[in-house]
Image (cartoon, rainbow, N blue to C red):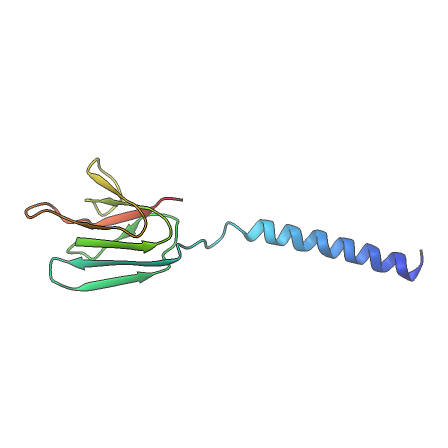
Length: 113
């Protein structure tokens, strides 16, 4: 085998390994681009930047009375702290939701991906 053949083989093996590495890591650590901001019953304003698209996210212990979704993906808000229950709301990207007076606050959310 000549030097040129070794270089071609090395380049092909390197390209294959790079492809496998990128494909294997592409699903890890995916985040929503943008911010989620919410106000609490105690008038605190909280902003979360680039939240993970995986799992359930808890809001402040007192809950959220208004939620602004400034990410590039939709979200689902829940009244319970563990993203369970039938009382939910679907909040599309770039929109805001406010609870009505007397309603329970939002306590957790998931991102739709």
